[in-house]
Image (cartoon, rainbow, N blue to C red; front, side, top):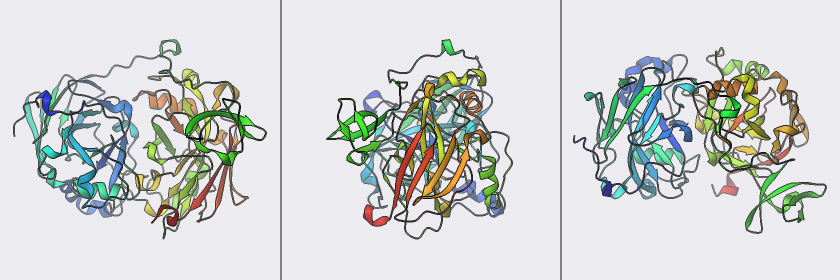
Length: 499
């Protein structure tokens, strides 16, 4: 295999893509085979029946010739990046090639881990841990499932492999992923790397090559922890996330408007007063990376204890979500036919207002712009014990509701003393207090910013208390948090979505 870089004329786009990066994990057939009977034992209990996916957020992305800071030895996985060229929803295997714009060499970096059950987010979601090469047009690649790949570390060939060794090839992966979530133009779907992947350390030069795509080169340096002060952190990137008073974003008469509460509904910035049902409610701010907390209320952990393979943890359980899951106030969320247990999760959502990296807990609240209400639905029928909770459960189109209002932090004296509750068809089914969070907001910001850069617009969904019950088609679900807002959502069936 020739590891010479591609000529510039062959690459049709720079490494920086416009969409979201979704990575397929445990998609290497020899890796699963090597696990043997372990796939049937705790914590997994069964082989993965569906794609095991993760979101690689914006702070992880970097391009060719980058220098990536690492805290220790890292695994370097060679992965084929599939660039989505048009909206892909419920795409068949036969039609999958038609949604692909091109391919890219991707180096997936990660700290070594020994379990795929609930690995801490810090193992893979670190700054610069997704290195993306130029995009090669799909027409230039005859068969993406028949490409040789290799990894060189410090000039030494450390690994060779083949894209044909995947559990799911390119077309099948697209088909199974788009069954429950929509891929947008500019999104990047990673076919997944071979496991075990070779190790590299600070000071190493790395080259990852894939046949027909060329070589992606970068280097590693030692990660240095430099404590940040509030004054040293740059402000937002131009988006004003700290207006006075609660605000919303709505679509009305073909345009997006900022609105504020009004006794008769809401008032647009131009003075028009409208009823709540006259507008389409959007998430109330421009959302960046979505970080969700699992098991962050002790009573909810106890509530789910019977189904958990592992209940003890020594750091926050964080998972990432893509923007396609987002929905606004008064929207509708689909309940697929045949599922037995779909439930809401009323959560306080914390909106980051300024860049945060290596922030101490005592300084963390200065980085909070404000808050909103979140209802983060889950379908427990689809849970598997691989990178749990898997995206098929928690990243479904329209299953993460934000709003209606963004409330500035200055208007919330104590975010750790807020009552929250959920009503289904008017009946109170869930109630709790943010005082009972296992990990507080400052603790979460300190933890997350210790290995990733939080940016303005990023949002932390802080978890839900006990009291989750099944919801059915036609149910109205209302989530309330004192001082933040009252959010309404309706459950609908497949028929509304032509299924």
